[in-house]
Amino acid sequence: SITKDNIVENNHIYETMKIMHDGGAIYVLGDQIGSSVRGNHVHDNNGSPGGIYLDEGTGFMQVYNNLIYKIRDRNRPVKHHNAWPTCTIYNNISFMAPGSGRTDMEQNAINQIAQNAGLQPQYKYLLKK
Image 1: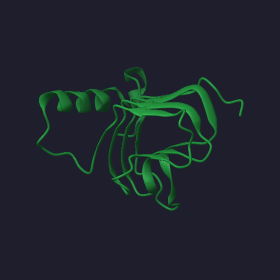
Image 2 (image 1 turned 90 degrees about the vertical axis):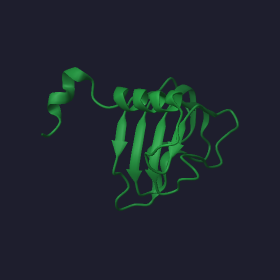
Image 3 (image 1 turned 180 degrees about the vertical axis):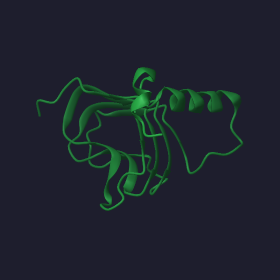
Image 4 (image 1 turned 60 degrees about the vertical axis):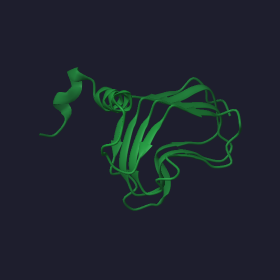
């Protein structure tokens, strides 16, 4: 693979996979030298697993600081399907639904990721009102 140095960052992705069911809100395939998936806010996805999907042969990918909840396969917010051990997955926050029982530090991390994800302020006017 010649894919390298890709960054999937600060996206707000929800209500995907309404018809097809084998995939995720973010799908990666193949070696991704120097690439990362970080700071994304992913929720309410029906596909399996529904969150972040590193499919067969994915390698050299870093997946970190993502917020993932209310997905079909809540036990696998980041699916590592026959991907290489060169992928690093850490510091992602996942739960079935927002709720209580979190420390202030955990809640602050959740709020920060959700706040930073989505359109940058200068482009928010593009959203339907």
